[in-house]
Length: 73
Image (cartoon, rainbow, N blue to C red):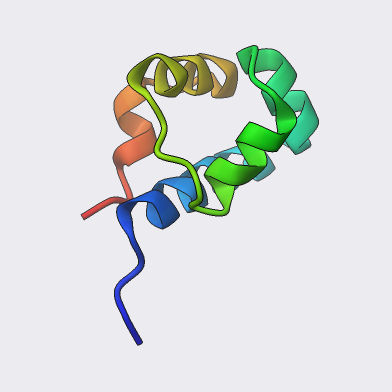
């Protein structure tokens, strides 16, 4: 089985944090000022997320930006 891509691992991190907080994708998107389809694409590992959006997601999830990367290699 191939190693998951960095986008896939990042998406898993976002999904895990979102679920821990009890947010729907729509609620996270609204809190971050992003479109819900974009958040879904991030969680599925389909999006290459820009730094500004990483910062928005961290703020919406109430974590330090670096925490979004803790599970990455």
